[in-house]
Length: 228
Image (tube, rainbow, N blue to C red; front, side, top):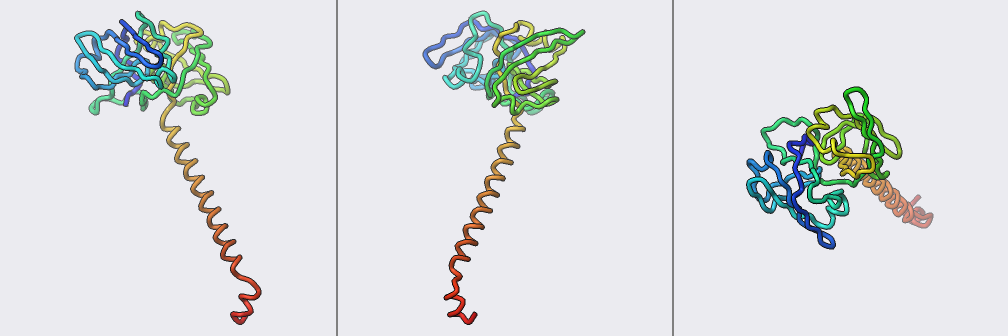
């Protein structure tokens, strides 16, 4: 699990992509101080497993599903990426619950300044916007951000200079693709509510069927034979 608070900007040294999968090599410093092979590291919000670690570089395998769901396929040697280690159990929970399991991608439609803040307008598919709520949380390339506006086609976030300076948002332009992960709590709540509703519908339907079946056994002949 991650918090969406980016620890470091890394740089892609090499990326080898086959037909449906590949391996990515990323240079870093801070996150590798206590990293071990097998550790989870979020790369632009995508949870990857470190398969090799040296003093200033680590590698991770990327499977086909990850390429389909995320913008990692857009990376090239020299690309900058947001990096975050999995949350330590003795750390502060400063962002929100980020699983590193991307829901899909969005496109930056507009970038505009408002005094010391920068607004990003991002389009996304309906199945993603369904879970985006105003003043709720969303992870953009792994960055925990607050939604300031949302409609049927896009949503907006406003970031402070510190966030821009510490993440790869400072390198983004209109038309760029970003990874999106909606707040997982909303998805769980919806699943539970829909599941309960289906159970109730089934129970009600079964009860009606049973009642009809029982009623069907009571005929005029049955009543006459039993003294009614």
